[in-house]
Amino acid sequence: MAACDTIAVLAGGLATRMRPLTETCPKALLEVAGEPFVFHQLRLFARNGLRRAVLLTGYLGEMIEDAVGDGGRFGITVDYVPDGETLLGTGGALRRALPHLPGQFFVTYGDSYLDIDYGAVADAFDPAAYPA
Image 1 (cartoon, rainbow, N blue to C red):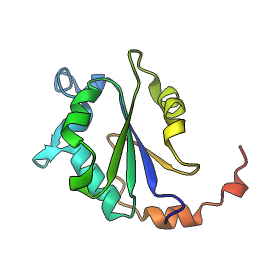
Image 2 (tube, rainbow, N blue to C red; image 1 turned 90 degrees about the vertical axis):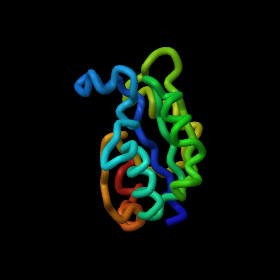
Image 3 (cartoon, rainbow, N blue to C red; image 1 turned 45 degrees about the vertical axis):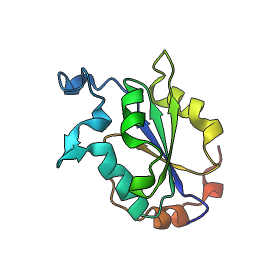
Image 4 (cartoon, rainbow, N blue to C red; image 1 turned 135 degrees about the vertical axis):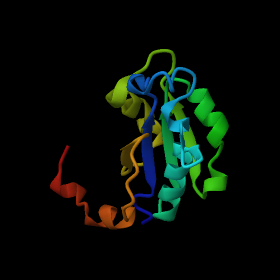
């Protein structure tokens, strides 16, 4: 799956529906089964053939970076693209991240857990069938 081994993870929202839990903790770091959700996510990506995750962070993003680090302990390389002072939303965050992403990549939300064969999805996708 060398052609598509990167996933962009949208993890920068305010998570207002999760308050008060997210007043001091980003949603990606809320515990599920004893550890932050993003830890489960990163191991899932690595187990399913992805080699790199680019976390698009915003609200309390420094906390995510401090907790996750370079991703080595999860078996995946992790890079970060922060929104900056102004939260950019889904489209803005992806646009800002484009220079850090390869030509083909997956996108997921920071609260999604899709246990799929990413390689099979990449192999089945024909970019020529979907011109920009």
